[in-house]
Image: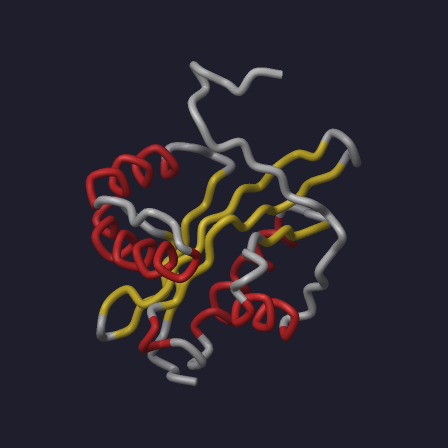
Length: 158
């Protein structure tokens, strides 16, 4: 692993680097890539949200990885859950320990907040991500994810 990688909290000046990573992730999972303007607006919003965290990994090349996560009270179980909707490493820095460093920091934050669980999001087709998470000790569950994608103003009829 390149010992020059370091993980830190993101700031608004990281928007372009985070956008580049988000575009790589979108390409991997088949989503529409975000614009830098949209990424910057969302980053600013999340940086003001006390339970949201954004981390970046960088080296002399710049930002090469990122993670966003939520520290959430879980009413159903009466505890704290950390949800990680995004973890991405630039293609030319994968398999160098960057993702592991990011997840180590997520685990530290989870521990500091007495979280009982860390939830990750990975598409079924993203085999590389799923294998990576399993290598860190995560297990896949039988939870079925349902998403509503459409207009909130014009929902489907029953």
